[in-house]
Length: 312
Image (cartoon, rainbow, N blue to C red; front, side, top):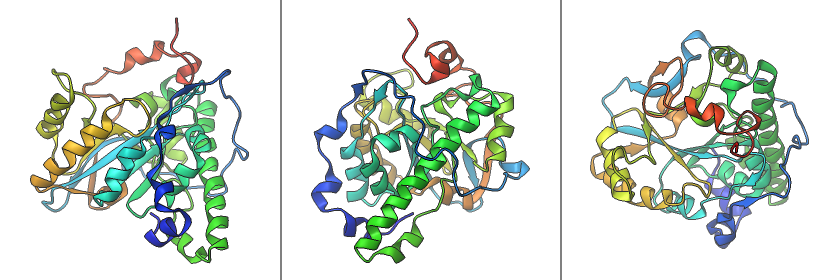
């Protein structure tokens, strides 16, 4: 979590608001397979305890509070630049809505200024969403470690750059509020296999899934169906999955409609870390979207073990 003084001391209001250029989703001439400038992070997290090693879907709160975590993935496979929904983030800022963003390492490198703004913002926390959205169920231990450690290292590189900017503005003390490392992760495609749990646990990163696939309409379609789907399934301690890159295209409208309706029901928005501090994780062994095994078809859909284009 950052600080308002840091955020507004480093960026003018028009810089924070963004532009339509941020929405661009581009296909690269060649897939970007470059590693980050540093491939191993300086901060080494301790392995997870046994009760945090499975896939966390929601939190059983200790107190009867209506708390929910909005989470937004920032995915970017190797052949693309995936964009940034500045209008969605602006809405959250304007209404003081706390949220967690799971950022791909390559996405952070492609969007450094936006990533640093999210780091500096006291409303938000960042988590690890793998380097190029690799399907970890298909990867061996070395490949999984690379996807996650490269992302941890990229975060540190940008945090160091943020600290340099802060020092130039006399804001170096504000950097104490910006975490030194990403401390949560989300599975790309929601996919894992038995061996991935131990690999990720040894890296010290709790796996945060979701209890509601927010951009689904259930049996319906369109914006109204998505809103109804969320309202039907929300419960205290829930975690809602959405995206803040340029795909899907109408998430910003969903957030605009859903947030006030949840507030009318008495819900308050917290980050995933805050949610975890207030209860006990409810877990499963294998990640999925809405029902067990509903994401296994993705194993054969994309090349490069999930990091490349759709297979023909």
